[in-house]
Length: 376
Picture 1: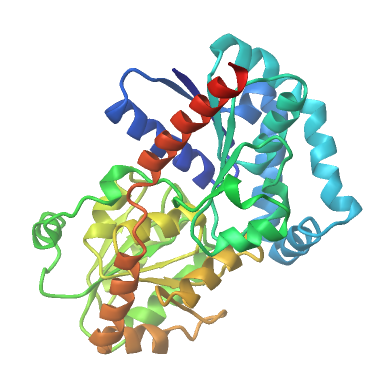
Picture 2: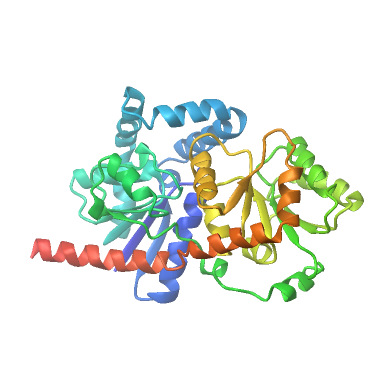
């Protein structure tokens, strides 16, 4: 069996979900030939750069404009019809990429790519198409006529997709796939000691890479002035300017802080923590929930990140920090009220999607068997 997982690099989480499924298949179904393909990069590096850079600019520099576009394209308007028409122009360029590999099944983890493959299926591509949605709220851009199955983040999304006209039988609330390391329980005390942190103190992890320097520093300073005893881990990602600013800040901080630049072991720091402060990106949220760590979310980009934040708040797995600072009281209450933090952790534990990739593989086999019976 050959499985192609098509994605794109806008936002980062789409590719992480794709690689999570790939990792599961390589470990548990070695007979499967699986390949992750960055579809936009494959058909046109210029198109890839234009879309990725445009997404990043709108989301970080003009979030209100991004939110308006997100809202308008989620309605039945001329604008919402523009994306399918635009994608159909580029779908033909995917033919050689797919023909070279010859997949039996195609998974997609990005709305643009889903639309492209759907377009090719309408032109004769036979492989079943499974769309894996990577946020906690639906958007019309994910919906395409030739999708055979939708894997969604939670049961909450089933009626929402039905509202968009997707038949119930095509919707599978298996959860957003994340890598297995996030579900493996580690010895927390040993982890903290290995990181030269105190196992007796609460640990707050701040995922800070996509923020501006002044804003995240304001939040960090406000939190570290709280009277409660705790320690912090700050991950800046590849934000060199932010990392250098924290290099100057942390030595004089009243709270011990472990500063981390880019890491491919995020799960290690999540498992060592009691609370995560972050933007609510779909994959970051899913990875934190897999680790059973409550979240404090802020600066959600209007659109999908707001949907993610609302889902977490509704299910009591997170708190929301106010914009423009003044987030100290919320963190202070959480760290002082162990019962509230415990209840939030229990809510995270109850939201168990550890079998997502396994269920997706079963779904793939079922779709292929159904196709075989139809063609017999």
